[in-house]
Amino acid sequence: MQLSNHKVLMFVASDYEDLELHYPKYRMKEAGAQVIIAGLKEKETYKGKHGLPCQSDVSLDKVRVEDFSALIIPGGYAPDHLRKNANALEIIKAFNEAKKLIAFICHAGWLPISAKVIKNVKCTSVANIKDDMINAGANWVDEAVVVDKHFISSRTPEDLPQFCPAIIDFLSHQEK
Image: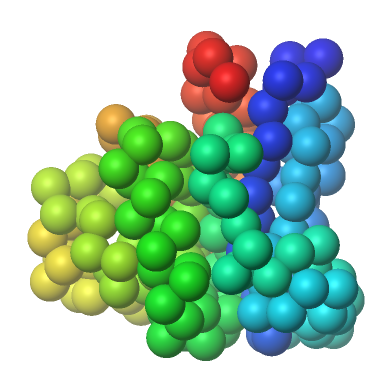
């Protein structure tokens, strides 16, 4: 399978956007990647905005960035909860320093903003946080999916059919 040598980290917290977590999770698994879900606590169940549950595999403070090829950050209100967590921000900074893939969709752009890693990065987000992205130094565009350096971004769940293939394509051309 395309991504059988890749391990992908995903963040979860209360009120995540259900489709933005579950759709990429299963698409990455379908492509052969191992997917690990990190939350504030290990083995905690979080409820999405629309009620779907997701249990974390590991707590953010136990994540070893060197074990992963990519980070996927779903949107919803979860990014607003996670942007206050020092471990989440340190993970993003470490992925950025290692030039490992950081993929985010919708409101998930709040996390790279708070980690201060998107200055001069061409990216997109839900229109509601466009000003936040621009004020953080991003080169914001209104496109379904944007790939720049080691960042992939999309606007809303409607863009998931473009977002996930972009992640799979990016990782399939990367060594673990």
